[in-house]
Structures are given as structure tokens and as C-alpha cells.
Image (cartoon, rainbow, N blue to C red; front, top):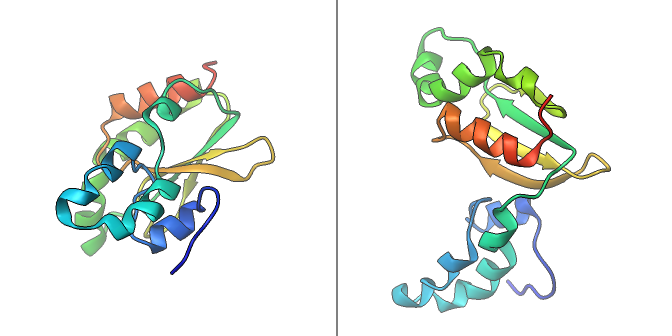
Length: 144
């Protein structure tokens, strides 16, 4: 695979095996594992730490699994209890531009949308607690 130019899409990065929250500092570690051939792809999929800091966006979509707790899905949902607690609380109402979408089988994901409504950035929040979700949203969205 040859890739040249600017950043890759989040979908292309996932197909290459890179997380949507990949920090560029992680790419520096590839050489330690004789994985230098991955460096160009890593650099096109990563985010500088400064990019993750306080930058307000217009809208964020929070995708979560349907809250059906029967049988096998209860075990699956137990991984996201913190996200579910956040969604069921009054906290989502505090953020202008936050949209909650229930998607069967979806890991909890925050999708930061640009002014046109296109996905600008996608972050897995699988292991985030409610305080982390609230803090991130406070940095990125206007509070009501």
C-alpha cells in the first residue's frame, strides 16, 4: 500500500488498524518494535496532543448501543455502564449541540461534526467514566 499526501480519513485509519485517538507521540515508538514501515501511515492517522486541547465544535454525536439488557447483551452492555449512566442522567441536556443516537451493536463513540455536519473526528469512549465524558464535552461544546 502506498499512501502520500495529507491526513487519511478515520475510516481508512481504522482499516489500517489505527485507533481514532492515536497520538503522534505513539508513532515515535514504532522503531522500538521494528515497525518503521508503518510510520508514514501512523503519521497520517495521528493527532498532535495540542490538537486534542480546547477547541470548541458546533455539534457532537454520541453513539451508544441500544439499551436492551436481555441475555447476552447484558454482558456486552456492562462494558459501557458509565456511558449509559451519563446518557440516562440529566447531564446531556446541559450541552448545546449534543445528539444522542442509539445504534445496535455500536461501541460508545463521540463523533465531532464540522459546520457542514460531516464527521471531523471520531473518538472511542469505551473505557471513559461519566466524569471524563462530561469534562470532554465541557471543553468541546457550549454549556446551556
